[in-house]
Length: 172
Image (cartoon, rainbow, N blue to C red; front, side, top):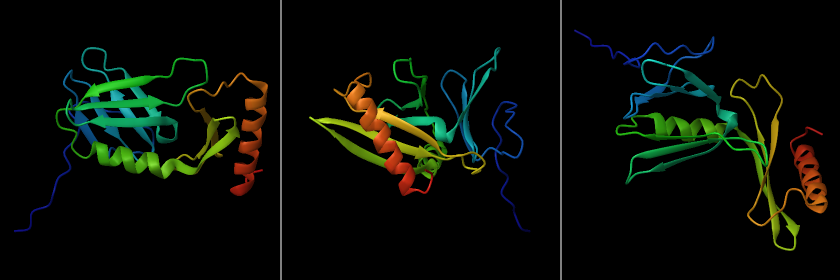
């Protein structure tokens, strides 16, 4: 008799966008469910709310895992000067979620350049694309510590860096 593997489903009714399916998931200590599809990461709050947050992979600024504390931290892309959404979760059994997060975030990056602006100032220019390729590239600038984004010289240099990067990938 041949046995077939059955994919274990999340313990909640997780509604994902049309065309998506859950590839990996885990339950957090507080009952939150963290799940990932090809296109996004989902956070489903515990009972009774069951509110769902969907973050497309190209909108994940950073994801970090602390093995000692089993703490997962996911930061969303934000606007300079505005609070950046950050999700901190304790994952006692992360299963395949960490592997999926790394793979999907990395897959969304089309280009990343650390560009010197002079006088010890740097910016990072990043182009990201949705997994479906359905949308244009999203362009982001991250300012290194000590680089003032409100400085007109920094703003001009950042615009020049983005233009050069866009030209490099054929999106002028």
